Image (cartoon, rainbow, N blue to C red; front, side, top):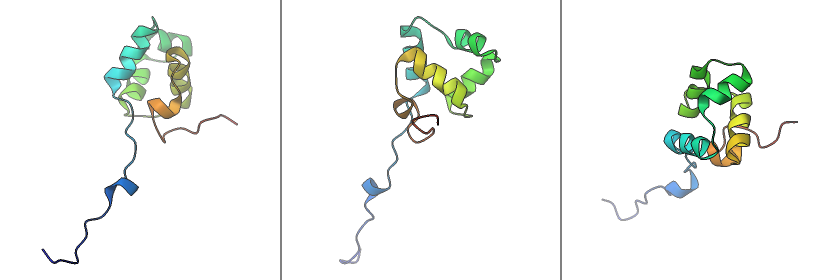
Length: 87
């Protein structure tokens, strides 16, 4: 390796990962709720809620309800995926 070579600093470009889907599910259960209950409240198919939890799709409405149920901020559940406030 050449002496003047410097590896790029990965810390500057590192993004914070979203909370793992199993952790989100656990927080929902700890709040005495379920993804099915969230789907019923929002009049959605349960697979829609599951896809948001799994990170396969985005839905601000579902994300807001998960945040409300769990008491966790969107920035902790899905960093960088949703704006922090609806305007």
